[in-house]
Image (cartoon, rainbow, N blue to C red; front, side, top):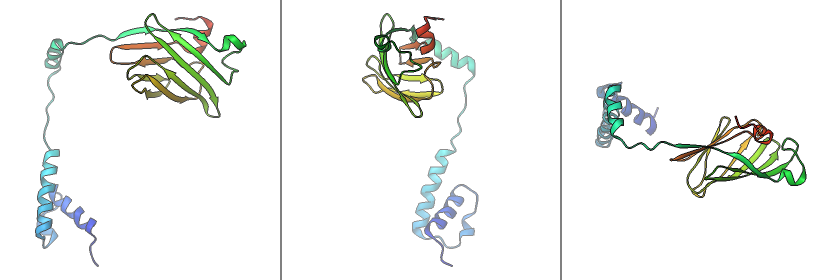
Amino acid sequence: MKMRVNDRLIELVDVATGLRSASELGEISPGEMRRLSELRVVFQAFSIQTESAPVSAIESVKAFLPIKPIQIFKARLGQTSLATVGARFETADQFQATYETDQHEIRMSFERTTMGWNVMGKLPEGIWEIRAKDILVVSDAAGRFELQIDDISNAEWRMRTVSAEIVLPSLRKAVSGDTA
């Protein structure tokens, strides 16, 4: 039975990692010897030992690093398209909402789908990490994002960039005026 190329390569990997001895392979061609030598170099690189520093040493180094604390902003619901039609978000098929802080404006569009809600948003420029429930998406550089979520009524939104985090209350809390 003729050996396939992949089978021979697996045997060479076994030798390079020390699982088998080279003598078990029989005759090794010059090309296979070069490949075996390359594989040994690769697997040696993977076996480099690393050591952890003591926690006290890590904390000492951190004390010297300039760490800028992240500012946390609590947003409030500004305008919604629901007010103009007298609708409630629970029964609407689509609507827009604006959330505001003293320094930010977040525009969001909600559209009901068969799987829940499609949410598109626009944050200030920059790369933002957007979390709602167990969903995480990242905006583009212009601050635009889109995600799918099953239920928007109780989802608290956290939008974070390098220097700021904006917390949006769930729609249920926002429309009821609950700011806790």
